[in-house]
Image 1 (tube, one colour):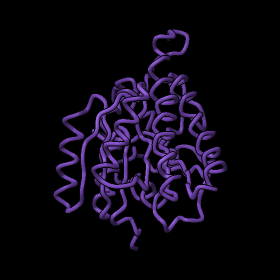
Image 2 (cartoon, rainbow, N blue to C red; image 1 turned 60 degrees about the vertical axis):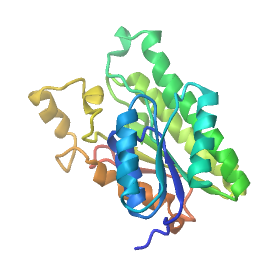
Image 3 (spheres, rainbow, N blue to C red; image 1 turned 45 degrees about the vertical axis):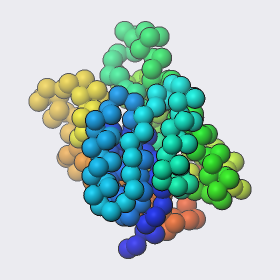
Image 4 (cartoon, rainbow, N blue to C red; image 1 turned 30 degrees about the vertical axis):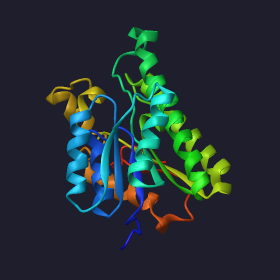
Length: 254
């Protein structure tokens, strides 16, 4: 199926590694021009941009701390100047910590709230304002299933991720008049560089227990997630908005 993404400009936050990088490269394989946003993963974002460019599309790596609104606005301006009007935003960047809630402190909470919640709001507003001026677009928000069903030792992460549901549905209702759709993809554990942050460096016995919660008896892989993200971003999903789609190996079922 042609997803009709060729020539579309896509911005992926947290695109320097892991799932964000895989998502950006999947868009490039569909012929989209891709901006790989990063904060600390500059090398990975630049390598991803080179790999995307080798597929015959325009691409670049753009750095910005999502806690800095001015930096976010500059990054979005740079992306549009280089690649054209942004038609798709994938909010993938997040801060996560695996720690018992009663042992956590406000200093543990702050980066998760500032990056995952406020940072996503900053990036979304900066891009959505331009989408509205350009006649529309699609926003796909990534979140963890902890935000839907709760998770021990990930209480603060789950709290920040739960806000993604409200954000997605509210964006869908408020921005539809501007031709902007918003959907979310909710995932369980995916094998990327950040896996240990979610599992707390689980040993073999702990991993067996984790896997027992998955009917399909394996963790996800980036290629398990990217098709759903691409479809929701695509014009093929033009009548789909405000939805939270779970891709989680059966870990949690609505």
